[in-house]
Image 1 (cartoon, rainbow, N blue to C red):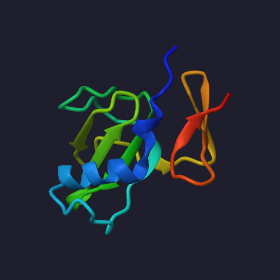
Image 2: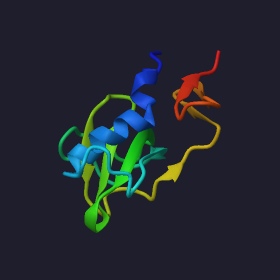
Image 3: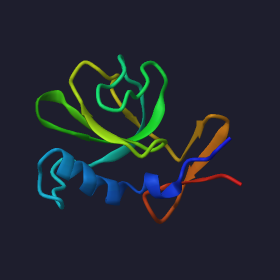
Length: 115
């Protein structure tokens, strides 16, 4: 089983990409990005992210209920419309995904696989 690439979980760097995707200034922090286990209600349009299967994602709220989503597993990002996702919940100090446990780094806002 392949582990998640840690670079894909760096919230600060991904936040800049999501700002560009939303058409905002790259450094805009009005709506902060956060990492979550996200579950979609229906498959996404652009990259066919699965419905009903939670996956780690970095998300940022957009206008009118949209959500800019960066899938930490695939490295793909897109904007999903309102009512096509379940309310995201930020992760705690650790989470499990596909049998592997990831722990939050105490200094940086990212997760690494537990040894």
